Length: 221
Ligand SMILES: O=C(O)c1ccccc1N[C@@H]1O[C@H](COP(=O)(O)O)[C@@H](O)[C@H]1O
Image (cartoon, rainbow, N blue to C red):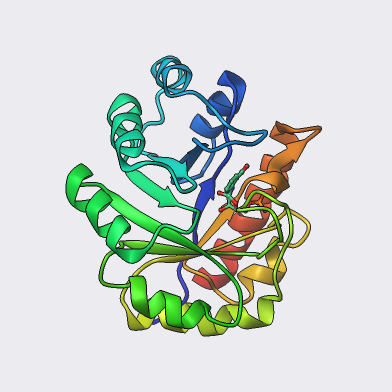
């Protein structure tokens, strides 16, 4: 099958302005972090931002790190999330419970490492997609660090073998996205790489979208 234009997820939206920017972007997924850290947001605020700036078909993604299941369920209901991203050490059984109790798609984020392929196999029956992120000590994600992308083809193959979408995350930026696109991932997930001084930046988004568009034009030739 010829390569497809990758899905693009814009993550870590943490202000009304970020949501406004995401709404006008080509991202298919808009992500909100409900975990401690500089991008943590409150469900009530997210609901208000989404009411003010409807996403017109983009899927709302709620990201959690080892959160209690009841918090996941309540948050997903409040913001009407479409996708739940589990970015901590939630075991496969917990992913299955969350999927069953919410009826939503659940994606498992896994850090790149020695056992990632085994983990993909262990979660594959209980989730609807994967995100492979860089492993950074003391952080669960949003680090702006990349892993060695020569491992990307192996992950793409694993996603295809399980017939699940697999996104590549970690330090993806407008300046390096072409290197990643050369591997033809199904999806890319970006948070830090679209920020200037901690704020999502229209200029960086424009640069990224130019590169995504030119990749799409190249592969359609
Ligand atoms: O964005 C965050 O602050 C965050 C916090 C805790 C867990 C995950 C988080 N973000 C996710 O991390 C990856 C990589 O992000 P980056 O582009 O390197 O900043 C991505 O999946 C974000 O959704």
